[in-house]
Image: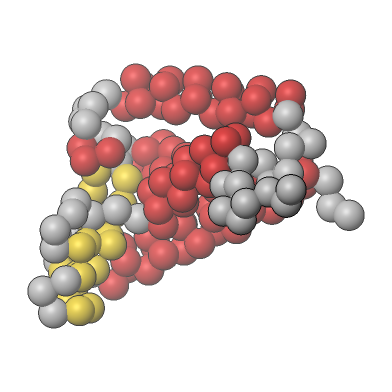
Length: 155
């Protein structure tokens, strides 16, 4: 059986690789600001840069964003260490670590994050962003526990 911390690191590593690879492909295939239609009127691939966090909030606050991300990751790691035996906790921890580190790598290297998944009715995002959102949702599910069965108890 693979220890939960190793599972979390494997997931984080896979997320970082997928995130950085997809961003690199977009940057080498499209000029900054250029778009390619994937699904008419629904989804484009756009080479965009985000200097802030979600939806561009805190744009230009590189040190603040890095510090807040570092604090959040530190708290997550402490929580994980204290509760590493919690079933499935390794999955959201790995998704959150990988997503945050993938975007931090962009910030450190380029001063902004490459976003490219561009739904017409939503701001552009990337693989790391998607993993962070999924990680938060799964973390809440793991913490709260799976929903109880809707079957009535016998007796």
